[in-house]
Length: 343
Image 1 (spheres, rainbow, N blue to C red):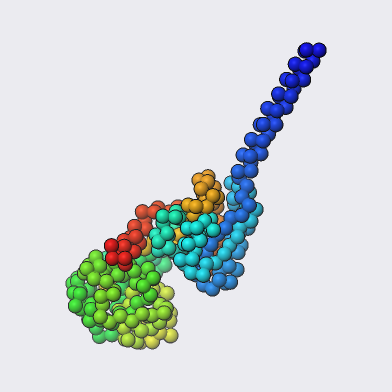
Image 2 (cartoon, rainbow, N blue to C red):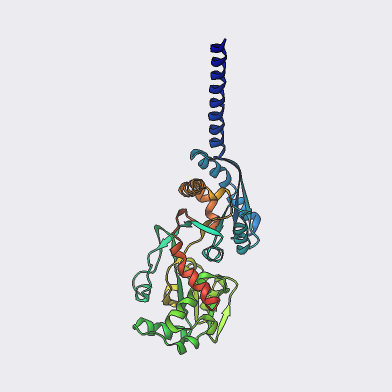
């Protein structure tokens, strides 16, 4: 009898141990189950257009993450009302990940981490040496995918613009007085290539910024800015480094140029690298506190960016894929923001 009771107790103990082991397995598997992944996208265009274009990313991400051992029940994509709104959502943890500019990342970098940097098509000239920009074959897009671009100071066909370009071509540095005597066409103070980085360039070279210039006209678009340059209303424009490639066809057809853009414009200044848009993750999101999931999410987007379907979905964002980000690459952006705050 005693042996029978002992045997029954032994069986109960084994059953308890097996049940315990089963519970741990279930818990482990459950940790790789995510009910909802919330992604916020900056308003690159109107909300509906962006949401429709990037919509297929949801299914692609679910598939890729499943391959990596994470079962995501739903991927929700929302479009912010502004760039800052997306930063605020990430900061609060109401969004797990977001597609944001480098400026937005830096503005909220105490609450969000940069995970990926977007890739863009490179161009044949990528240097701060203006001599290279003004000699040889015109710049053109190449097959390289890069994490950065630059901003350039472009002179136009006005008398003052041409005179200053000739001086630069001789290897002479323009004086602040000469620059201050020109009419500049710029973008809003929030634009990296159309205001912020050119301001940092002037600060480094002259101890001044765009705000110190006497004749500045703000444009609502780069098209307007280049039209002013072509017509002689402005002597100099600040823009992204592939601005002439983008406007080559329309320079004479629509913008008012009387000769090719290559003959009527020149480069008198080039900024340091401006790093591309980012994919950032929230530090307060419980989902993104799992480092294994962060890694899997990053890998998934990198892999998606190498497919035709992925590139089609990313096209509206201007992204050609992704690579792992280095937070240090955005130090110039931090410097720009400190300058703006007067620190």
